Image 1 (cartoon, rainbow, N blue to C red):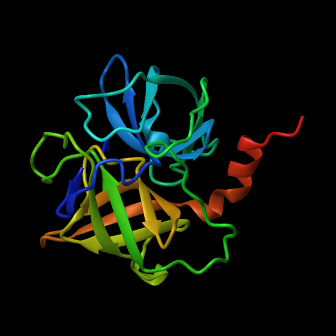
Image 2: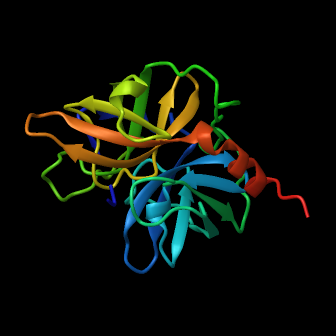
Image 3: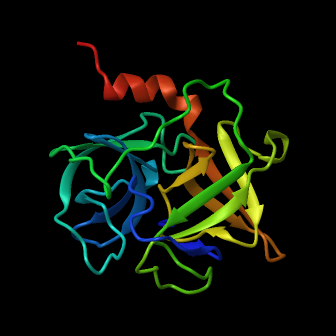
Length: 216
C-alpha cells in the first residue's frame, strides 16, 4: 500500500507542523511521515525506497521546499507483510524548528492508556476509488476500536467510512496529543466501511530509543 484521507476536511495550512511529505526522487512514490526530533522522521517501513527525500513544513505539494536526504532505518523484523511496519529516517541535514516545522510527542510507555478520540491526516487519495492524491493536507476524526476487535498484535484499528487511503501510508494516528500509530494498511469490507490498521508505536519504544540514541 502506498497509501489519502477520505472524508474529513482540508487542514488549516501549517496547523500540523510535524507532518512530513516523503517522496522517492526517481519513482515519485509518496508517503506521509512525522517529525520526532530535529534529525529523525517516523514513517511506515513499507514506504522504504532507494531515493527517499523528505519535505518539511509542507501544505501544498505543488509548492515543495528543498528536500532533505535521509538514511532509512526500517525495523529489522519488517518483511514486506503486515507487522513491524515502522521505520525511522535520519535526516542528513537537521531541521530548523519554527512555526511551520515542529515535532510531535510519542507515548512514554507501552502501558499508557490511549484516548479513543483520534485523528489521521495525509496527502493521499480523497476517494478510495480515485487514483489522484490530494494536493493539500487533509485530516479526519476517527474513533479507535478496542483491542479485542483489532485482529493483529501490536496494531491499532479504526473501522469507518472515512479515513486513510492510498498515499497516506506512514502518516500518524494522533490520539490526545501523541502520535500513537502509523498508517499501515486497510481492508475493504463489503459495506462502505474500511478497517484501517496502524502500527502501535508504543510497542516499539525500546527500538526507537536505541536507534535515535545509540550507545557505542
